[in-house]
Length: 405
Ligand SMILES: Nc1nc2c(ncn2[C@@H]2O[C@H](COP(=O)(O)OP(=O)(O)OP(=O)(O)O)[C@@H](O)[C@H]2O)c(=O)[nH]1
Ligand SMILES: [Mg+2]
Image (cartoon, rainbow, N blue to C red; front, side, top):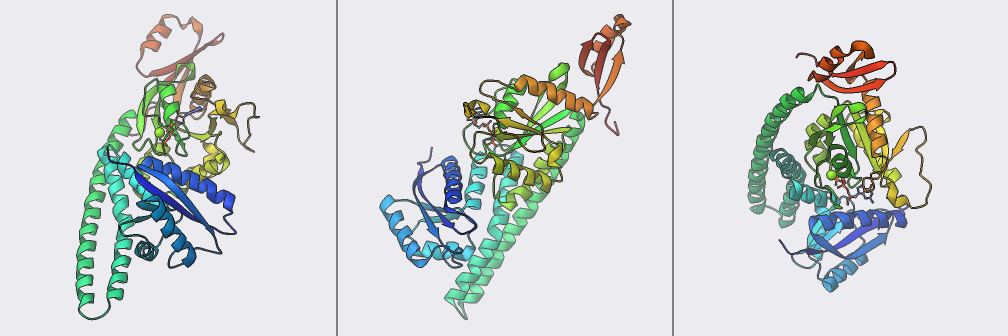
């Protein structure tokens, strides 16, 4: 395994972004850096009206950063905002030789690159990285050629720039085509699965989606106290309340300020996930920022054309609340779960089944108990995905016939 890098984190506090908020943001950046393989050895925050257009920090602060980098031996400086290519360039010039300057988006892209396992996830991440690089490459080169100045250098720089851009654009086109093929394959698979009711788990990274997925489907998946443990959506069958069988999908987590290139290239994956009959929006209620994480999740859902109000809201990790009262979300029905103790999971199975039935995700057939032998035959039918018995008779839940099949 590669040696861990040392990182210094930097942020600017403004009137709109108070110091207390900045430190919570930096805690999250620290978790991201930890996941990416770096140990945080220092943090530096400057209060100013707005980031400096040339160097993000003011001149004196850049000096302080340089000293901090030297004292700690850090090889990388991570800014919690978005850096322009020019800012990266100026900062790199003013910091000790070889020190990397990254912004939050670059750190997230790096983690996605580390985590990608399937062919599809790898293609999606590479596409996002190239799209992130393309404008930076352009402006950086323009900047360099302007600095070198004048006749002779300009032509060379531009030629190299054109070549680089063309190579990247060609690769982007290849990736988009390859991803198109993967999407088609998935579409075919989805059509095959479609007749079983489907549930997808969505929510902020680290909310506990994979933990809940394992609980529901009784399989071990990668559950980790790491950000973005899951990149590829996993789909498994699970038994819900009333014996109803459904597919459950575990998905990639959301995060504040997710680089838009990533959202764009993971769009197909996310769209597939959110086309489920029912979405469970899972939130880590033990996080001091859970309300913000809930909001970020709802924003991402809206950007995918989903009405967040139609999702089942589940507040997870209630075991961590201790004696604190369980919070409400105004205007919403919420369920409380703990994937550690299992609390609330059975109730969730029941609610999921009720909601799927209410939404028409299965066809319902009612038989009187007297049906006897017929009932035996009916239960053996492969289209039956669940049943519920009562004094009045039995309800059978059948796979819904999808259009065109
Ligand atoms: N105390 C407690 N910890 C939990 C609970 N559910 C999950 N965790 C822990 O929270 C961490 C994150 O869980 P995951 O299931 O990997 O979270 P995720 O939402 O899949 O995260 P990404 O894949 O990164 O989006 C792990 O360390 C879990 O063990 C819970 O109910 N209580
Ligand atoms: Mg996960």
